[in-house]
Length: 371
Image 1 (cartoon, one colour):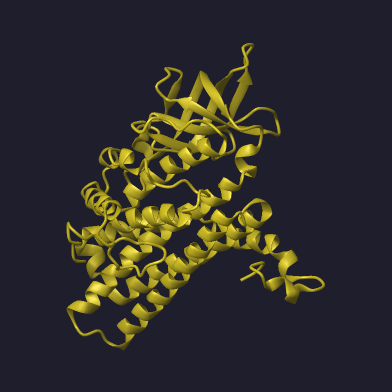
Image 2 (cartoon, one colour; image 1 turned 90 degrees about the vertical axis):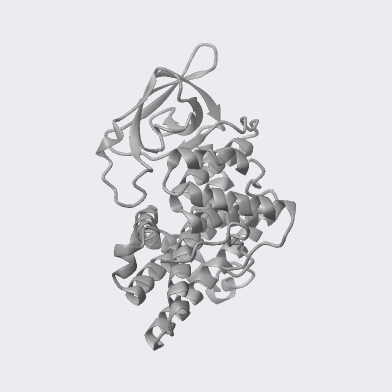
């Protein structure tokens, strides 16, 4: 079993640090340490994870000059427990969306989800009323934490071809959700996703039609999810490292540990570089979408390789006797499926065609245009 981090110095996964470094002593790092101790106590427990959200009120918003700090926070939470990170990530994303739309941030004691999935047979319509407000009617699929959060940013159709984001208060009697008992996932079992239903629910618009997908922050949020993948993979690497420290590792164990270290270093490097690009204004528009696709591909590939190598190195023992490791393995396996594997790689290939094909393609691979 991996050793418990010290209550006074839990390990902070800063994107600019080695994955086992501890923060230096300061009021901010003391808050970080306390947050991670509480995150460990909340592992796998959604209500307790929600209680941590007010402590994240000072977390930087993306694009405000310290995006690396935001992603480090998400990675650090994920390295402790992915359930906690998956509660925090959409909440912070919702705050970022409201900020990017020029809206006031909500009170720190509110809890938020972001629901933008669409599926055949499920449609949510937004209708303008005579006083200029909107009402929502219909069904929204794949709403994570619907039975726990009190507000959400939800996308809905305003016409046959246009969608818009809206703020909805889930306490309204017209907002309901399906029975969560049909959720059978063995990974992230407490993070149930269900369909939500709306019957005349008032909604406040967030941006204009199609703004939600076109804003730079859409790409930034996708990279924040990748930071969670990275953090969870760091947690697995710590288990492997601890096992190697308990007894003299053989060459095969060292090979796996070395490969894991290299893959995580690469993932951390691309996240760090991407955070700088976000803060410098170089991750807007098509450039931001391409960067996000690259970052997610690199980090997802690294996390999948870490999953495989840790499994090969450690065998079935910790999967059957170490509850924390078994949960982290199952949680990350499920969470990584938000990356659509070969389909996302094909989409990245289409996005990058202009970089790698046509006249002067070799010259396009400098100045940050291509890796």
